[in-house]
Image (cartoon, helix red, strand yellow):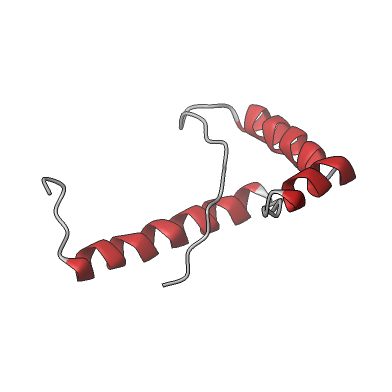
Length: 79
């Protein structure tokens, strides 16, 4: 399996859409700055900016992938 580490910002389900859009715009602005990209790249990281629907898809795909891995491994929460 190939894996990556990612960081995302989430909010409670009842958060108003304009607030989520404002947060997404602010994070995108910061992670798109050349100095931020340079610093992250020096640490082996690559900023990924996404729209809100893109992040939702990314999150759901990651959950599905790891659910399958856990199921196939036979791991249990009490182990």
